[in-house]
Length: 352
Ligand SMILES: NC(=O)c1ccc[n+]([C@@H]2O[C@H](COP(=O)([O-])OP(=O)(O)OC[C@H]3O[C@@H](n4cnc5c(N)ncnc54)[C@H](O)[C@@H]3O)[C@@H](O)[C@H]2O)c1
Image (tube, rainbow, N blue to C red; front, side, top):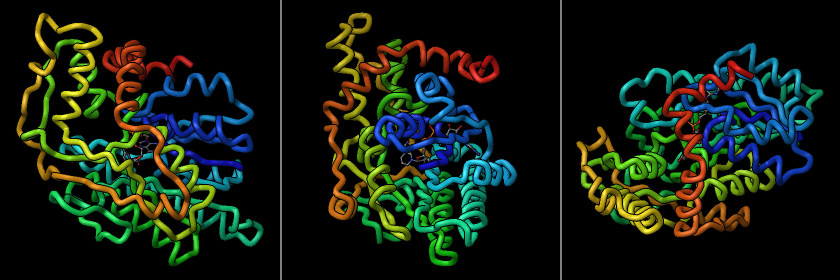
């Protein structure tokens, strides 16, 4: 099985590259990543050592680049695409939306066009092909205290990030209905776990709390997200590739809703317990409420019953376990965080 994974040097992508190589003996992975600020080759140095070049190859490239994308389809005779590549940080999309449109919408379009060109060729067996577009629950907009997003909830995105993801979801589905490209869309809730770039809530709070820096929390801290351990997301993606049906979409969630402020408190308390107080004070005292994010969605809640029943997938890591493993991972990989903070990780590729 020859798989094109885009954005494989980011948080979820790097976890998935490792996961599929370990769990699918027949998988060969081509990872195309532009190495933006969020892409870090060091996330896959173990994979590179263990699987390259026979089962794993990395290509630095932009999914918006027609030649690069077509060359990869042609040269590797790609059978599955898993499209993680995206600009993914909501705050950055509010400051500078353009790159989000370019990568998330136009880049996805380029990949779909390549699939149309190569997979609809009569010599190609379309029944073996899958184009899995990785999306987010943020496309559905915001919920109040009640209700859940189902796969038929109308899209109502609030940020340039979620609007660009919504647009790419529509394109992926349109390529199924119009050209019969076997696209599948997954909409997952918030992920956490190893290798998440330290601008996102959980790694940011761990890192700042370790260093005694202030812990910024938007608004009143009562925004609710469903939290999914990244390893569970990986198993859901593989289940979707193996058993999901073209033209379908699947919500992926963990039935684990938490308020941001409660997550921050859990991290503070664990670090206090493990490392002792920070300058004699509980780390919760570092919490600082900051003006709310523009257009900040209040609550996301996922109904994942379709993937539970149709694909027999269930998450296996409870939040109480996953968050401890995540904190411990960051404690044991502070050099990884330092390399990002100092910008050293950008040199990794140039020095290879
Ligand atoms: N992180 C979450 O909680 C979450 C939840 C649901 C869905 N998602 C989706 O999952 C996917 C991966 O998210 P993540 O958190 O791992 O993101 P990330 O920001 O950590 O990684 C994105 C990766 O894509 C690469 N990339 C960006 N632009 C590219 C381009 N034009 N061409 C090739 N590569 C490019 C980056 O270099 C990086 O390696 C995204 O599509 C995101 O929308 C994320």
